[in-house]
Amino acid sequence: MSMISRRDKGADVTSFTRMDRLFDEWFRALPMRRPFGLDWPAGEELIRVDEYRDGDTQVIKADLPGIDPAKDVEITAADGMLRIRAERRIEQDREDKGYTRHEIRYGSMMRTLPLPENVSEGDITASYKDGMLEIRIPMPPVPEAKKPTSIPVSSS
Image 1 (tube, one colour):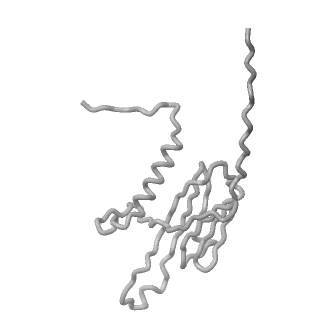
Image 2 (image 1 turned 180 degrees about the vertical axis):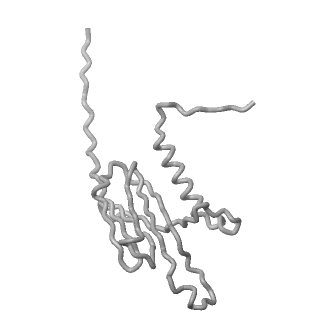
Image 3 (image 1 turned 90 degrees about the horizontal axis):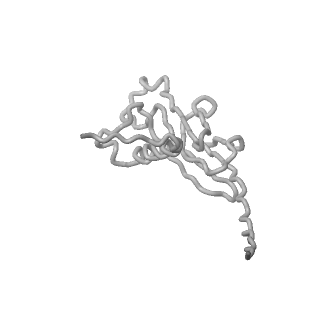
């Protein structure tokens, strides 16, 4: 007998979707996936990033050499997730050069990262210089903790 479970209609599906995406990204990053032929069907590579905090700004740096950022990079922010998609195009004269070794990968690359809570997606900026894409995410101010309110107890 098989068991079928259903999600509650009130469950936060967005949280499940975010976890699925994060698990997929983690699995893509495993170094052992290539030797065993566990490549992704779409042929997309994982964009490697460094992520750190610089004062009140979250900074994401992505290593994307050999691309034209105006044509080959798309950055979107929606539903608490930041998606970076890029494509490294094959050179037209590649066949004529008589390569001894050809290890540079071409094709599409993608990375999806969770955004910090309460970030204004319209304030996110990106720049590209010397093969590095830098995305800056201003962090919202942390609300001050309110002092507890004392409630008097009356006796009857």
